[in-house]
Image (cartoon, rainbow, N blue to C red; front, side, top):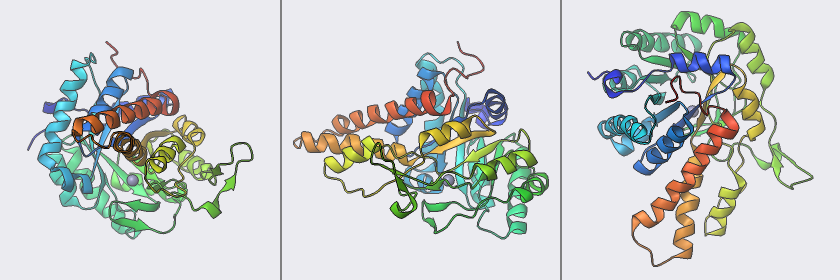
Length: 336
Ligand SMILES: [Zn+2]
């Protein structure tokens, strides 16, 4: 058993409380390789932002959980080396699907876990979430639960339709489970194809597709029931058009990839939404960077020569999210 505290990591408790009060949100970026992690840590350290490093079950299988744990420990030291003496870094399990997986992560040094029982009947979701909370809280590890189902593809799980969170259930769920934060469904979704073109309308000025708005009435309903309680938004990539265009220009084939407009995320970040999950945008930025080098320098075969620019492109994206969308810049408790 390794405590996250020995690794220099923190749980989400204080940073969420501060984010709700301050009207901003903490970035939760998924990672599964060194270049992503370097870009995330550099972006967070240089902007003095707290950050959540997320590992999905698929990422854990891909990268090996032992290696990921040491990478997170390395992330703390790297942030310090970059001049951030008091980094606030969370190592979080994204979409844990069983008690055993959550326990294994907690025992390996994760400081926060999500148990996603949202696809289960309500009572089973309550029972599973409660079981994880009871284990996690013994070690001061925070737990995210979920009510409502997001559309889209998350690792191997595919959901065709949204089921919005029912505000009338949230007090009962939080009270019975003791979870520390709640992921809700208000129209965000996983992946780079969040909406079908027929769901969107065309902006007459830009000619681009604009997706239907998020269900802020559902968010308001949840906040009325649970004032000041930490709310999480999954599937909140914006699918930047310039990255999609770059990928297509350099030989890729992404058709009608559509994300959540940044204005909607800015609005959400000012509310009780204190954690916003972004994964697809980083994948797009990395792919665009690699494709550009492959297309322009076909003789290049040193991985550093294409992963390096890809990493720079991701760092730029992460900084943009922190500074211009989530508002978490300069929000570390100790800025020196
Ligand atoms: Zn998710």
